[in-house]
Length: 260
Length: 326
Image 1: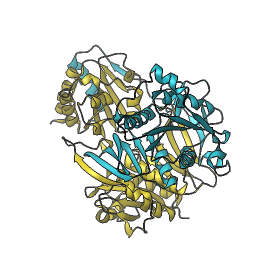
Image 2: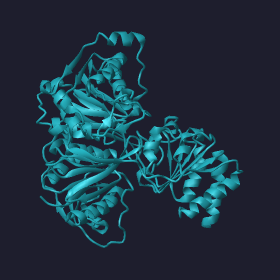
Image 3: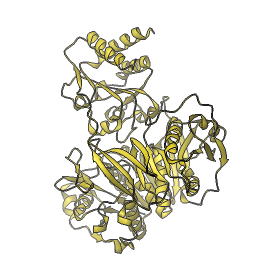
Image 4: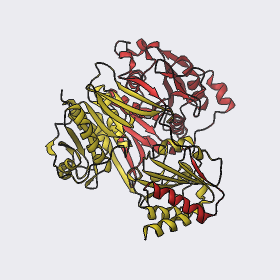
């Protein structure tokens, strides 16, 4: 049983981020980390290794060359090897372009489960896992609070409107997990040392059977403009008042805005 | 190629989700700009009988994909078949189910995807969307690249459109074309469990009273429930409160919980970490009550009340009941 965990390197949460003049995200000089929600996918995969239901874990990322740092950090948590797909033609990839590349790389790696985090910190569509599943015509089990694999199938526990369900589908498939799978483990010093010797391959587009022409600039969408959000009025503060007076002031504020 | 605007209309327990009504109205608005019709793709329990009534909210036609209680992803193949027949854009709710189906469309038909969007319009026959990115610090405008296939897939947050009420129109109902044989139909519900307590759908609430670490216990949510009840709203929580087991995860607001867009959000004992903020920052009015005068939520709330929530919230509940005469 083999799992490939797809991870993305993102700007650190809270880092100062902006769009460059070419309307692409300016990543220069910004501290980069493993997308925090991908760490839960790593943790889930490693737990399946710990309980003996999975034999090998490979990490896959698409990004610039420095994304190899994120892969090295993942390897320090555990797992066997890593693949970075990097190519100048991939700058400015959107969700469709990213999915196209990951799907082609996963065709080559052929895992039983391609596992991903539920969302990325720097984009909010959460469409890449499902698009990858569609491109490979594999089932998708998404938003799992827990994932297990047995007898040629995988199951995820997923919150429903009124409780939770266990969803099931035959392998191979694509799955995503949430932050409820358990806190990601820290990389130990031994893990960090071991990670330096774990194999890491770098693939270009041609290594996964794609060409820049197939990818139309790796995006079907383009950003045409960026601007600052509308200015909000400054925060009004209520301080140092007894509770009853504070409550009256809050009620006045709500009444003025027709919220009561 | 038709100029229609398609939208996903999810049904549960015999009736349409609120998102179906909102998207019917949103699709009708966009269709009036594109010169087409609003077309519902209806699925889930109640879809067969209820699809025609979406006409009251703006749908001109409704295609029924199925009436069974299956995972939304299992309907994705039928959505793909319907989308192949045309349409300039397809609106999907930015919920886990809506995103699953939208993603399948993007991957199967190689379609451009946008969102979650805060606004959408047609400009010279092309869809143009606005979305907040980089944790809300930048608004970007996006459109499809030249020659991109249609429909464009657009994720829409709850409460982006207000459903038209009081209409009497009836959508013309048709059955779906045969669903394509895609792998997604293999996803099944193996087991289903009900939560201990009944939980509301927070995405549909227009007033939310949310509690965080400062609420300090399961019982601490009591005063918040009273306030929510006085206001006619629902109770939500930060991840810290859900992790502590004080409240079910279905009520968690934030990056890994629900993304809400109520007209009023009251946060009590919530510090306002970025992971929570991205789940509620599009609320129209934000009130925060916190004993820490330096809590980050004080930087983006419209009204920041520094004080003890256990004193202020009961007093506020009494005051609201007095004014409402209840």
